[in-house]
Length: 208
Image 1 (spheres, rainbow, N blue to C red):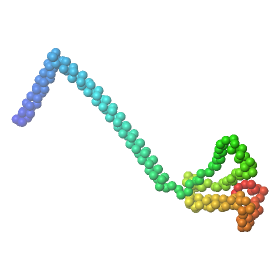
Image 2 (image 1 turned 135 degrees about the vertical axis):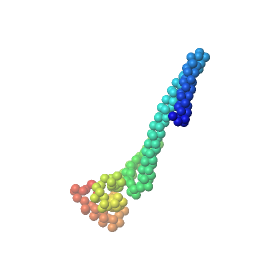
Image 3 (image 1 turned 180 degrees about the horizontal axis):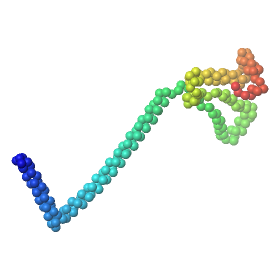
Image 4 (image 1 turned 90 degrees about the vertical axis):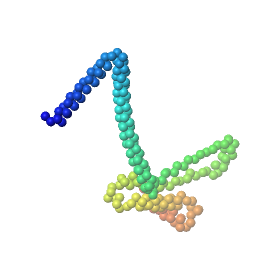
């Protein structure tokens, strides 16, 4: 046997003997009354430390879930922001007009003022204004609902342009029909009579 192998074997045996000695010393120390209380305290502290580590592990998992939830929320906010930015940058040039609503308010101050104004109201009855109904412009959502083969023929702007021209023609026609005869010029009067002649029993009283 080589000398190096013998030295390694002796070193290994000495290490084992040293370990056995330390184990015996520790066992003897644990049996001493003065050290039992210390060992109990160390065991209790180890138990508390283990419990604390478990709680920290649970808290770390909770924070990880919270971080993932906040990340998803941030991505959702970013998507909504990008969509809102896109809508702001691509507002359609024509939007549907709101239908005007006419409200009449009457303020009564006193009975004497009402009686004083009564003859005046009888002499000059107020005429209710006649509103001319216009065709509403199409919305972007309505335009998207049109089949693709038809959308390629006219653009969204062109369609609303035609609707606006039709509304102008309708407003001009019914302004003439609602205008008093005394205030008409000869050319306007001719148009007025032509509009009346174009009416039939099926279209009379119906708006264009």
